[in-house]
Image (cartoon, rainbow, N blue to C red):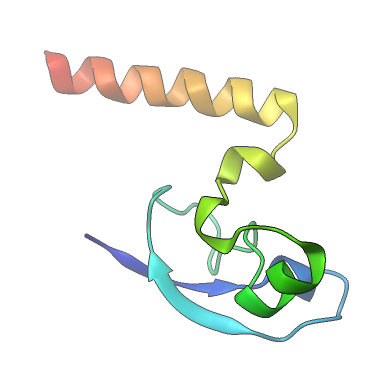
Length: 79
C-alpha cells in the first residue's frame, strides 16, 4: 500500500491548514491531493471521514474521464 500526504479540501478557500498521511487509494495525480476533508472539517460538515471518495468531489466530466482511464489500465493488466 502506498501512502500520500493529504491537504484538507478546505485549504482551497483558506479556512483549514490540516495535512495528514493517508492511504493512496486513487493513485494521486496532484501533489498533495486536496479532494478530501480532514477529520475536523468532516465533523463540522457532518461528513463521514472514512466514507469519502474522490468521485464525490469530481464533476461528471471528470468522473467519465477517470473511468475511461481506469478501464484502459485494467485492459492493459489483462493482456
